Image (cartoon, rainbow, N blue to C red; front, side, top):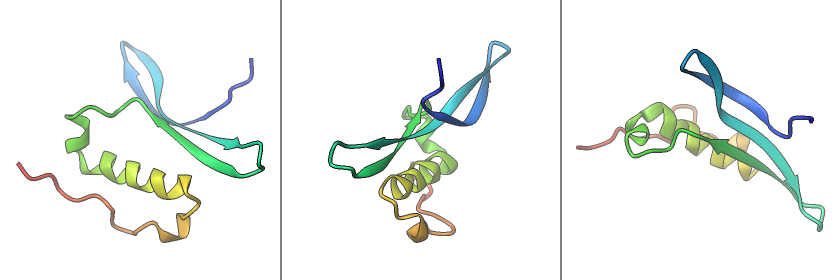
Length: 81
């Protein structure tokens, strides 16, 4: 079976390396193509991490084909407690 998504980052769990972020693309019957970003790291605790919020924000820009608009330092903001 051929892989349908590209693993971007892997994590370690029980001595096994597991993908935690993937990308794929989808072409609709109309011919329009869009990016798909999947992650297994989205709990409330995970979202306290600026790096993950930044990754999700950049993924949203990528999915919308707006890579040239991705802020150099953002778009994550530090969580307030």
